[in-house]
Image (tube, rainbow, N blue to C red; front, side, top):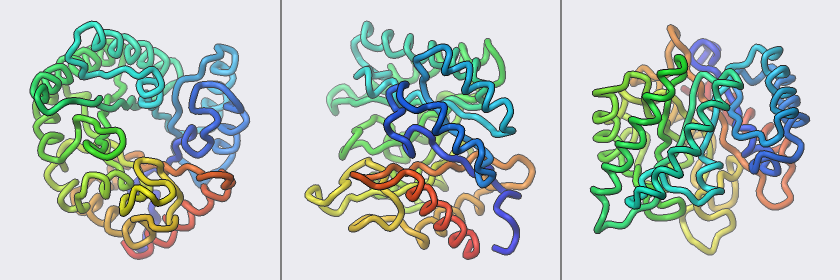
Length: 303
Protein backbone atom coordinates (compact mmCIF):
# COMPACT_ATOMS: atom_id res chain seq x y z
CA UNK A 1 0.00 0.00 0.00
CA UNK A 2 1.29 3.47 -0.86
CA UNK A 3 -0.14 5.12 2.25
CA UNK A 4 1.99 5.03 5.36
CA UNK A 5 1.21 2.21 7.79
CA UNK A 6 1.29 4.79 10.60
CA UNK A 7 -2.07 6.01 9.34
CA UNK A 8 -3.65 2.68 10.29
CA UNK A 9 -1.67 1.31 13.24
CA UNK A 10 0.88 1.98 15.95
CA UNK A 11 3.82 -0.29 15.30
CA UNK A 12 5.05 -1.81 18.56
CA UNK A 13 7.61 -4.24 19.92
CA UNK A 14 7.29 -6.69 22.80
CA UNK A 15 10.35 -5.77 24.81
CA UNK A 16 10.81 -8.92 26.88
CA UNK A 17 10.53 -11.24 23.87
CA UNK A 18 13.05 -9.32 21.81
CA UNK A 19 15.35 -9.22 24.84
CA UNK A 20 14.47 -12.47 26.64
CA UNK A 21 17.02 -12.02 29.43
CA UNK A 22 14.59 -9.44 30.87
CA UNK A 23 11.50 -11.67 30.83
CA UNK A 24 11.74 -12.56 34.53
CA UNK A 25 11.63 -8.90 35.56
CA UNK A 26 15.39 -8.54 35.99
CA UNK A 27 18.45 -8.08 33.77
CA UNK A 28 19.27 -5.15 31.45
CA UNK A 29 15.72 -3.81 31.41
CA UNK A 30 16.46 -0.09 31.34
CA UNK A 31 19.22 -0.39 28.76
CA UNK A 32 17.16 -2.46 26.33
CA UNK A 33 13.98 -0.43 26.73
CA UNK A 34 16.07 2.68 26.06
CA UNK A 35 17.11 1.15 22.71
CA UNK A 36 13.49 0.74 21.74
CA UNK A 37 12.45 4.17 23.02
CA UNK A 38 15.24 5.77 20.99
CA UNK A 39 14.09 4.03 17.79
CA UNK A 40 11.44 6.14 16.09
CA UNK A 41 10.29 3.14 14.04
CA UNK A 42 8.30 2.10 17.09
CA UNK A 43 5.20 3.96 18.23
CA UNK A 44 4.42 1.49 21.01
CA UNK A 45 6.13 -0.85 23.43
CA UNK A 46 4.86 -3.82 25.42
CA UNK A 47 6.47 -4.47 28.79
CA UNK A 48 6.00 -6.87 31.67
CA UNK A 49 6.77 -6.98 35.40
CA UNK A 50 9.84 -5.05 36.58
CA UNK A 51 10.88 -6.34 39.99
CA UNK A 52 13.11 -3.51 41.17
CA UNK A 53 11.21 -0.37 42.22
CA UNK A 54 14.11 1.90 41.29
CA UNK A 55 14.45 0.41 37.81
CA UNK A 56 10.70 0.59 37.34
CA UNK A 57 10.78 4.29 38.23
CA UNK A 58 13.64 4.90 35.79
CA UNK A 59 11.81 3.06 33.00
CA UNK A 60 8.63 5.01 33.65
CA UNK A 61 10.52 8.31 33.35
CA UNK A 62 12.13 7.08 30.13
CA UNK A 63 8.81 6.03 28.62
CA UNK A 64 7.14 9.26 29.74
CA UNK A 65 9.79 11.07 27.71
CA UNK A 66 9.47 8.81 24.66
CA UNK A 67 5.94 9.69 23.48
CA UNK A 68 5.31 5.94 23.02
CA UNK A 69 2.07 4.10 23.72
CA UNK A 70 2.56 1.49 26.44
CA UNK A 71 0.89 -1.87 26.92
CA UNK A 72 1.46 -4.36 29.74
CA UNK A 73 1.73 -8.12 29.27
CA UNK A 74 1.04 -10.28 32.30
CA UNK A 75 1.42 -13.57 30.41
CA UNK A 76 5.06 -14.09 31.52
CA UNK A 77 4.13 -13.64 35.18
CA UNK A 78 1.36 -16.23 35.02
CA UNK A 79 3.50 -18.72 33.14
CA UNK A 80 6.57 -18.26 35.36
CA UNK A 81 4.46 -18.71 38.50
CA UNK A 82 2.70 -21.76 37.09
CA UNK A 83 -0.69 -20.21 37.87
CA UNK A 84 -3.90 -20.82 35.97
CA UNK A 85 -6.59 -18.16 35.72
CA UNK A 86 -9.19 -20.83 34.88
CA UNK A 87 -8.09 -23.28 37.56
CA UNK A 88 -11.07 -25.37 38.64
CA UNK A 89 -9.54 -25.41 42.11
CA UNK A 90 -10.76 -22.17 43.69
CA UNK A 91 -7.60 -21.63 45.73
CA UNK A 92 -5.45 -21.87 42.61
CA UNK A 93 -7.79 -19.58 40.67
CA UNK A 94 -7.67 -16.92 43.38
CA UNK A 95 -3.87 -16.98 43.45
CA UNK A 96 -3.81 -16.34 39.71
CA UNK A 97 -6.36 -13.53 40.03
CA UNK A 98 -4.38 -11.89 42.81
CA UNK A 99 -1.21 -11.93 40.72
CA UNK A 100 -3.07 -10.29 37.83
CA UNK A 101 -4.64 -7.65 40.10
CA UNK A 102 -1.14 -6.72 41.24
CA UNK A 103 -0.09 -6.61 37.60
CA UNK A 104 -2.97 -4.27 36.77
CA UNK A 105 -1.69 -1.92 39.48
CA UNK A 106 1.78 -1.98 37.94
CA UNK A 107 0.35 -1.43 34.46
CA UNK A 108 -1.44 1.69 35.64
CA UNK A 109 1.72 2.82 37.43
CA UNK A 110 3.63 2.56 34.14
CA UNK A 111 1.00 4.45 32.17
CA UNK A 112 -0.21 1.49 30.11
CA UNK A 113 -3.32 1.82 27.97
CA UNK A 114 -3.79 -1.93 27.69
CA UNK A 115 -3.34 -5.02 29.84
CA UNK A 116 -3.08 -8.58 28.52
CA UNK A 117 -3.24 -12.07 29.99
CA UNK A 118 -3.86 -15.62 28.79
CA UNK A 119 -6.13 -18.46 29.73
CA UNK A 120 -4.67 -21.56 31.35
CA UNK A 121 -4.55 -25.25 30.70
CA UNK A 122 -7.64 -27.42 30.98
CA UNK A 123 -8.83 -31.02 30.80
CA UNK A 124 -11.56 -32.09 28.41
CA UNK A 125 -13.65 -33.62 31.18
CA UNK A 126 -13.72 -30.30 33.05
CA UNK A 127 -13.67 -27.96 30.08
CA UNK A 128 -16.96 -26.22 30.87
CA UNK A 129 -15.98 -25.80 34.52
CA UNK A 130 -12.69 -24.26 33.40
CA UNK A 131 -14.61 -21.96 31.04
CA UNK A 132 -16.87 -20.73 33.82
CA UNK A 133 -13.83 -20.18 36.06
CA UNK A 134 -12.26 -18.12 33.28
CA UNK A 135 -15.40 -16.01 32.93
CA UNK A 136 -15.48 -15.38 36.68
CA UNK A 137 -11.81 -14.41 36.81
CA UNK A 138 -11.99 -12.16 33.77
CA UNK A 139 -15.01 -10.32 35.12
CA UNK A 140 -13.09 -9.68 38.34
CA UNK A 141 -10.12 -8.32 36.35
CA UNK A 142 -12.28 -6.10 34.17
CA UNK A 143 -14.14 -4.71 37.17
CA UNK A 144 -10.90 -3.92 38.97
CA UNK A 145 -9.29 -2.31 35.93
CA UNK A 146 -12.40 -0.23 35.32
CA UNK A 147 -12.43 0.97 38.93
CA UNK A 148 -8.96 2.43 38.50
CA UNK A 149 -9.20 4.09 35.08
CA UNK A 150 -9.66 3.51 31.37
CA UNK A 151 -7.12 0.78 30.66
CA UNK A 152 -8.46 -1.98 28.43
CA UNK A 153 -8.16 -5.67 29.28
CA UNK A 154 -7.32 -8.21 26.58
CA UNK A 155 -7.19 -11.97 26.60
CA UNK A 156 -4.63 -13.27 24.12
CA UNK A 157 -5.64 -16.29 22.06
CA UNK A 158 -3.09 -19.12 22.32
CA UNK A 159 -2.80 -22.69 21.07
CA UNK A 160 -4.98 -25.27 22.78
CA UNK A 161 -3.12 -28.55 22.17
CA UNK A 162 0.52 -27.98 21.17
CA UNK A 163 2.54 -25.76 23.51
CA UNK A 164 0.72 -23.50 25.99
CA UNK A 165 -2.44 -25.66 25.65
CA UNK A 166 -4.68 -22.78 26.73
CA UNK A 167 -8.44 -22.97 26.98
CA UNK A 168 -8.80 -20.01 24.57
CA UNK A 169 -8.17 -21.44 22.13
CA UNK A 170 -10.16 -22.17 18.99
CA UNK A 171 -11.99 -19.28 17.39
CA UNK A 172 -15.46 -20.60 18.23
CA UNK A 173 -14.70 -20.62 21.94
CA UNK A 174 -12.91 -17.27 21.73
CA UNK A 175 -16.04 -15.75 20.20
CA UNK A 176 -18.32 -17.24 22.85
CA UNK A 177 -16.01 -15.97 25.57
CA UNK A 178 -15.79 -12.43 24.18
CA UNK A 179 -19.56 -12.30 23.80
CA UNK A 180 -20.06 -13.38 27.41
CA UNK A 181 -17.59 -10.89 28.89
CA UNK A 182 -18.60 -7.87 26.80
CA UNK A 183 -22.22 -8.27 27.89
CA UNK A 184 -21.06 -6.80 31.22
CA UNK A 185 -17.76 -5.06 30.50
CA UNK A 186 -16.98 -2.70 27.65
CA UNK A 187 -13.30 -2.53 28.60
CA UNK A 188 -12.61 -6.08 27.39
CA UNK A 189 -11.43 -7.45 24.06
CA UNK A 190 -9.34 -10.12 22.38
CA UNK A 191 -5.70 -10.09 21.31
CA UNK A 192 -4.77 -11.99 18.15
CA UNK A 193 -1.31 -13.13 17.07
CA UNK A 194 -0.14 -14.15 13.61
CA UNK A 195 2.34 -16.58 15.15
CA UNK A 196 -0.47 -18.47 16.87
CA UNK A 197 -2.58 -19.02 13.76
CA UNK A 198 -0.53 -22.01 12.52
CA UNK A 199 -0.65 -23.44 16.05
CA UNK A 200 -4.46 -23.37 16.10
CA UNK A 201 -4.58 -24.48 12.45
CA UNK A 202 -6.63 -21.49 11.29
CA UNK A 203 -6.17 -19.10 8.38
CA UNK A 204 -6.40 -15.34 8.97
CA UNK A 205 -9.93 -15.37 7.56
CA UNK A 206 -11.02 -18.28 9.74
CA UNK A 207 -9.41 -16.89 12.87
CA UNK A 208 -10.15 -13.18 12.62
CA UNK A 209 -13.43 -12.61 10.82
CA UNK A 210 -15.69 -14.40 13.37
CA UNK A 211 -14.26 -12.29 16.22
CA UNK A 212 -13.82 -9.04 14.29
CA UNK A 213 -16.01 -7.07 16.70
CA UNK A 214 -13.87 -8.02 19.69
CA UNK A 215 -10.25 -7.64 18.50
CA UNK A 216 -8.48 -4.78 20.29
CA UNK A 217 -4.81 -5.71 19.92
CA UNK A 218 -2.62 -7.69 17.51
CA UNK A 219 0.82 -9.27 17.37
CA UNK A 220 3.01 -10.15 14.38
CA UNK A 221 5.26 -13.19 14.65
CA UNK A 222 6.24 -16.63 13.45
CA UNK A 223 6.07 -20.27 14.51
CA UNK A 224 7.39 -23.72 13.63
CA UNK A 225 4.72 -26.45 13.67
CA UNK A 226 5.50 -28.96 10.91
CA UNK A 227 7.54 -31.38 13.03
CA UNK A 228 8.35 -31.51 16.77
CA UNK A 229 11.94 -32.39 15.87
CA UNK A 230 12.51 -29.05 14.13
CA UNK A 231 14.34 -26.21 15.88
CA UNK A 232 12.03 -23.65 17.53
CA UNK A 233 9.02 -25.97 17.38
CA UNK A 234 5.93 -24.71 19.21
CA UNK A 235 5.17 -21.26 20.59
CA UNK A 236 8.72 -19.91 20.50
CA UNK A 237 8.28 -16.83 18.25
CA UNK A 238 11.35 -17.20 16.03
CA UNK A 239 12.28 -14.51 13.52
CA UNK A 240 10.42 -14.27 10.23
CA UNK A 241 11.80 -16.69 7.66
CA UNK A 242 13.23 -19.08 10.27
CA UNK A 243 14.00 -22.56 8.82
CA UNK A 244 10.88 -24.76 8.49
CA UNK A 245 8.67 -21.97 9.86
CA UNK A 246 5.24 -20.81 8.76
CA UNK A 247 5.34 -17.03 8.45
CA UNK A 248 7.25 -14.56 6.31
CA UNK A 249 6.34 -11.57 4.14
CA UNK A 250 3.42 -13.18 2.28
CA UNK A 251 1.76 -14.50 5.45
CA UNK A 252 2.08 -11.11 7.13
CA UNK A 253 0.50 -9.50 4.05
CA UNK A 254 -2.56 -11.75 4.35
CA UNK A 255 -2.83 -11.14 8.10
CA UNK A 256 -2.72 -7.36 7.64
CA UNK A 257 -5.15 -7.48 4.72
CA UNK A 258 -7.75 -9.25 6.83
CA UNK A 259 -7.17 -6.91 9.79
CA UNK A 260 -7.66 -3.94 7.49
CA UNK A 261 -10.67 -5.50 5.81
CA UNK A 262 -12.51 -6.01 9.11
CA UNK A 263 -11.75 -2.42 10.15
CA UNK A 264 -9.28 -3.22 12.91
CA UNK A 265 -6.55 -1.30 11.13
CA UNK A 266 -8.16 2.10 10.80
CA UNK A 267 -7.47 5.83 10.51
CA UNK A 268 -9.78 7.01 13.29
CA UNK A 269 -8.15 5.11 16.15
CA UNK A 270 -5.01 3.26 15.00
CA UNK A 271 -4.47 0.21 17.23
CA UNK A 272 -1.25 -1.25 18.58
CA UNK A 273 0.18 -3.97 16.33
CA UNK A 274 3.41 -5.29 17.83
CA UNK A 275 6.19 -7.59 16.75
CA UNK A 276 6.54 -10.64 18.95
CA UNK A 277 9.90 -12.00 17.87
CA UNK A 278 12.56 -13.74 19.92
CA UNK A 279 16.18 -14.57 19.10
CA UNK A 280 16.81 -18.31 18.82
CA UNK A 281 20.00 -19.72 20.24
CA UNK A 282 22.83 -17.21 19.89
CA UNK A 283 21.00 -14.92 17.47
CA UNK A 284 21.44 -11.18 18.03
CA UNK A 285 18.32 -9.44 19.38
CA UNK A 286 18.93 -6.25 17.43
CA UNK A 287 19.32 -8.14 14.15
CA UNK A 288 16.12 -10.10 14.82
CA UNK A 289 14.32 -6.78 15.40
CA UNK A 290 15.76 -5.38 12.15
CA UNK A 291 14.54 -8.53 10.37
CA UNK A 292 11.00 -7.82 11.62
CA UNK A 293 11.10 -4.20 10.47
CA UNK A 294 12.22 -5.22 7.00
CA UNK A 295 9.49 -7.85 6.74
CA UNK A 296 6.79 -5.37 7.76
CA UNK A 297 8.11 -2.72 5.36
CA UNK A 298 7.98 -5.22 2.50
CA UNK A 299 4.59 -6.57 3.53
CA UNK A 300 2.91 -3.18 3.81
CA UNK A 301 3.66 -2.37 0.17
CA UNK A 302 1.55 -5.41 -0.76
CA UNK A 303 -1.39 -4.79 1.58
